[in-house]
Amino acid sequence: MDLHAVQKLFDKPRIYQTVWNSLKLGVSSAVISTLIGFVFAYSVARTRMFGRKFFNFVAVFPVVSPPFVLALAMILLFGSSGLISREVFGMQSTDVYGFKSLLIIQAMSYSPIAYLNLKGVLESMDASLEDSAFNLGASRWKVFSTITFPLAIPGIFSSLLLVFIKSLEDFGNPMIIGGDFTTLATEAYMTITGRNDLRTGSLLAVSMLLPVLTAYLVQRFWVNKKSYTTVTGKASQGSTIIREKKVVVPLFIVCLLITGTVLLFYGTIIGGAFVRLWGIDYTLSLDHFRYVFDTGLGTVKDTLIIALIATPIMVLLGMVISFLTVRVKFPGRKLIEIGSMLLFAVPGTVVGIGYLLSFNKPPFAITGTAAIIILVLVFRYMSLGIEAGSNVLRQIDPSLEEASKSLNASGFTTFWRITFPLIRSALFSSAIYAFTRAMTSISAVIFLVSASWNLMTVAILSAVDFGKLGVAAAYCVILFVIIGLAFSGLNLLLKQNERSM
Image 1 (cartoon, rainbow, N blue to C red):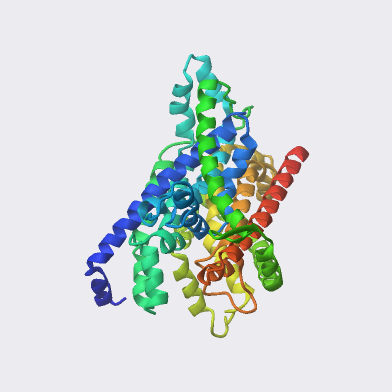
Image 2: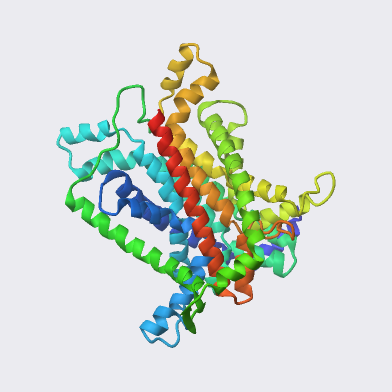
């Protein structure tokens, strides 16, 4: 490593401000996204409130689009020519760029990560623990603060970690709506692509690893110092259902407000796909969809094929690694665990360029093929399956597996008949998210697409660059439909498996 280059980089005052901006945005996004995810997960898993299934759908809906789509919706709604800012409030000049708008966008974009993590954790808790506390006269708040919340800490900390990492590596939203609020990811991206300085850009990317590694170690310290086991060999029942109106009504109001905000933003994108020219001519039209199916049908097929191949590989690798790191003790276990998370933490643009440089010469000349895109997606997002599997495995008493082995069951039989049914819900959740990430990834793959294999997210970004916002919105609607069908199919498969058990 050239230490002179490192010193030269950090001699610039702008770098320290950029580091602070990234940390500020990462921590703020992680806290707000996890809070939103927990409220939704608690409401869906623990109540039977009106609209609960719809709230479940809305809670995961933001993952079906490229991150920068919400930033575009923010500009269309609240920019100087925005639908709300100008048409509703008559404001002629507004400044929508900067930290506040970026924080709102990231909170909406990444709250599904926390929701999917926490919903599985809350649903797998043994209700007998809470029921025992109620029988002893504890209040609802006392039970929540002393039993429910402490048992959810593994999911909460892993959610904070994942959102923090996603916020640090995001460059699409800061590029579009960040304005003067620069982050390490955007600075690295612009350095590599704009100034063609791969070394400095790589140094900026490496500088992200310190806060990410720190967050990871803090999370592991808190999770490993206590026991969170709730699934044992004793008879147990499902999670407690909350019916008190003083709890359900406030939760319903909060979920309704957040849902309204999410629908407003995505409704703007969907509306833009069906009007002739947003902001000028609101006549209904299907011209944008005709354009997509005439010129971009191959791109839609390429994206779907790659996602269908990459998703099961991500989930299977995540399941295997989570089982090994939680249940098996072997030399190098921690290195594997940390390494899997660091792959997720490195900025996507740097990952993409690294793969491009590594696989463009024999004997590994796969640049321009589907293989290199699948490879990037698998190693970048398999950590989602690792986190989901690890959280659930920590709640399963190892004595269940030990009892099976004591009856001469093989390791595979024990895993398939005992462990797998207990972690299946988490694996399906990770499969849903892995599929959506494969369909909507942009930063890691933008340098790897080719004339033979193109992706919808790259086509969307290209349409935005050329000012074809209606075409970009039409691509997004098609993404929504594909991922919605996949989500429904996986949920149906999970229910069928549960009935067959």
